[in-house]
Length: 146
Image (cartoon, rainbow, N blue to C red; front, top):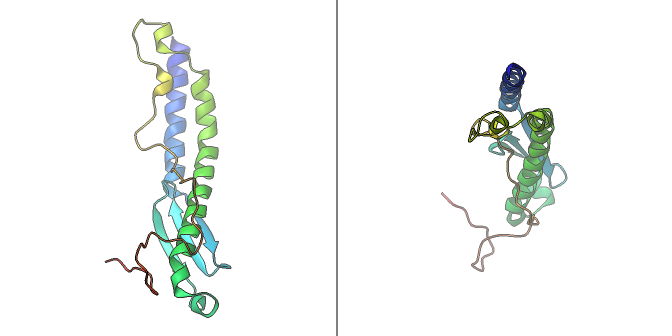
């Protein structure tokens, strides 16, 4: 039992270290030949968008939303991959832990312990192209929302 508690303490310390690393993690991706760049954090939340001033020399304005979406999805996939890499040792250690119910009937499974908000970002499976839009009206201009 002492060994199990020591493993749990190691697991919690490792989770704390990974959380600290995740708090500093960012991932960036580009679209439109590098003219659109998006940066997200470990949870996939958008933290920066940069559009080169020459974007409109190469692309039409109505393509911009699609390029931003494309870059954001790539950045989110990159962040999710890096979070998965960070979590791999924690997941491996969790699999090695015995179930507490092996020692006490009805006790919770220690392998299920993980702090709230400790998940990888979810990335939509379908990736819209630069010309895809949720705009259902026929307009020569993209929808601007305020």
